[in-house]
Length: 209
Image 1: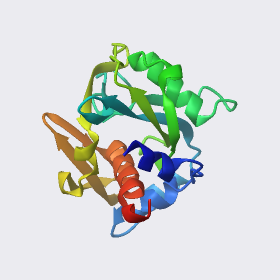
Image 2: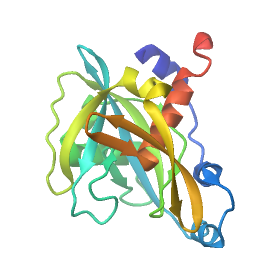
Image 3: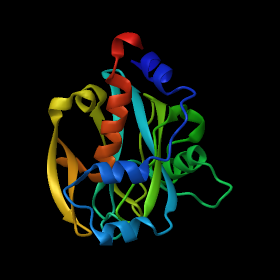
C-alpha cells in the first residue's frame, strides 16, 4: 500500500481547487452570502495526514482539538495550522504543527505528497500533506491545542461503505457533508472531505497504479 500511495502522490502538483470543491458540495441555490464570503481573502494553512506504520498495518493519525480553541473547538482534525508567514511552505508548516501538537519529529516523516487545497467555513485554505510515520512513534498531545490523539486503520478509511452523507445549512446554502464514525469519534467537515479526496486518488483505477 505504501508503494501505491507514493506512486499516486509522488510529484503530484497540488491544485487550488478549494473554491470549486466547496461549491460542488452545495445542494440547491448558492446564496449571495456564501458568494460574498468566498470573495474574502483566505488564510493559508496545512495539515499532516499522517500514516503510521504499525505492525497491524497503516493507521491514520487524528487529533481531537481542545475545547477552548477559537476555530473548530472539540472537533476531530489532523495535526496542522496556519502557515507562519509567506516564506513558509505547506509541507514545512504541516510538519512544524505536528511537532508542536503531538511531538512528531519532522525528521521522522517521509512525505509522499500533497492533496489539492480544501476550504473551510472559517476562512482557511488548507493543503493536506500526506506522510509516512514510523511505527515507533508515540504521540504526546500538547494540552494547549489537543485534548487527545487516536488512530484509525487506513483500510477502514478507504472503504466507502464507512462514510455517510448528511446535509448542513450554513451561509444561506445547503451543504453536502461527509461523515465517518469510528467508535465514539465522529469525523466530519473538512477533515472527512480530505479523507474522501485521499481515498479517491489512491483507490481510483487501482489496477493501473
